[in-house]
Each structure stands twice: as C-alpha cells, then as structure tokens.
Length: 91
Image (cartoon, rainbow, N blue to C red):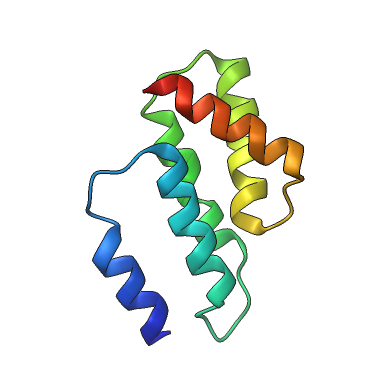
C-alpha cells in the first residue's frame, strides 16, 4: 500500500499524456495495494480521463476498452501497439 501510494502521489498530479496515465494506473494496479482485490479501482480512472478528450462515441469506446485491457494487464501486443499509436496521434 505504501509503495503504491508513493508512486501515485508523486505522479498523478503531473501533466502527462494518456499513455503515461494508463501506464501509471497499470503500475499501481499490478502492485495490488488493497486488502480485498478490486481490479476495477485503477481501471475506472482511465474512462474519466478519456471522457475529457471528447472523442466520437465509437472511438471513445474502443480507446476505453484498449486502455482498460492495458491497465488490467490483459492487453495483447497488438492492442498495446494500437493504443500507443492512438496516443501518438493526439500529440
């Protein structure tokens, strides 16, 4: 818990790209900081971030799905590459 808190507190307020935000949530999720497993804790943050991008609904759905898979650690290499390419297109 303390390690996750330190990582989160040192990074979450800093400006970052979407891919960096997803990576921060993935790192924290992997540390499993809570007594009761709740995989949705860090996965639920990213849709809120994506909503701020004001994407077309179909694209937003796809981006949310890819980001959620990455945070949960179940994304394929192909999904991760597609997500990174999308993030690069935002710059």
